[in-house]
Amino acid sequence: MLNKTVCDNARVVARVTADQAVVGTQLGDLTSQPVRMRSDARTSIWLDVQCLLTMDRDEGKFLTVEASFCGLKFGEAEEPLLHYDFQRDKEQYTEAHLQVCASHPTFETFLTELGRKGVGGLSKIHLPVGGRRFRPALEDLLECLINEGLVRPKGGWEQVIHKTRLEYRRRQIAAVVRRNTGTAQTELERLGYRVVPPDDQRLRAQISRLVTPRSRPAHGDGDDRRRPRTGRR
Image (tube, rainbow, N blue to C red):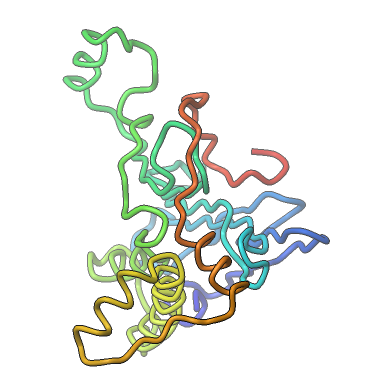
């Protein structure tokens, strides 16, 4: 998808073990490296993506994202501008969030007045982006970069992005339905469908587990390492 839209020589690699897989751009051992995107500017623009994948804990049937990192960087020194992060069961902060690597003097004064001097300012604020099921896709970021004129896309990029994003969203919709069967049933019946719950007690028990929310930890370390939990962070 990257090489058909905004990159020429992007290389995405997977490292697979018995119980997990790490996928990333220019992946070395367990750490990704940025890939350069096409642009008319002299300054380089880079994309850095990495995901930690495991089998889902409830059914053991679906490949699921445990953690992901998507960073936008600039210049030969690959200076970060922003990064989207997701960490399942993230302590303290929202699982899916955006962090902007920037400063805001007035905001930093505000933090100092709250007794939070030295905590990193704006760059340490975790901005929510849709939660576990409705977080942005990589395609959304690429579309933004293209529409803003920051990168030079290849012909036919719209169709490529639409196709892969649609696949992602359909998987997310399926996951939402599995874990919200009551809402799904109510809406389908409103539309005229007849929904018959399963008679199999094993399936009923499985559905009950899926729709029962898990409790999240109450406290965390207050620090986001900007990497999935895979080896060196």
